[in-house]
Image 1 (tube, rainbow, N blue to C red):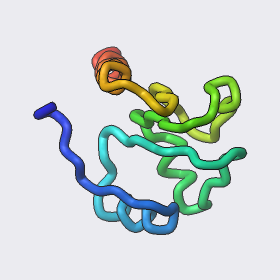
Image 2 (cartoon, rainbow, N blue to C red):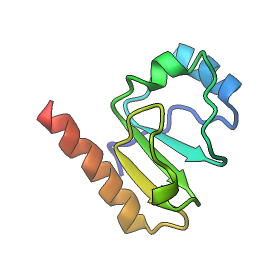
Image 3 (cartoon, one colour):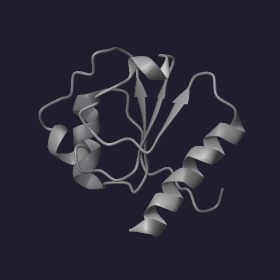
Length: 98
């Protein structure tokens, strides 16, 4: 997908904050490893207004409700490449509405 470019990746919230200070990506894939979501106070203002967050997780979609940030799409692991593409298309369609 030529329109996608990986600008950074990180494993933990504290390093994510450092990455966000350098560049805020248009589209963010976030892997949820545990529930409930405990968000670093430094990330909360960034994520609560981010327009392009796609969640990836092994949790059932019904278990992931009331997240403290907006979500464009949810990919339950393991997911297919077709589902990956569909989540990107969903993000693109929302961007075209704004």
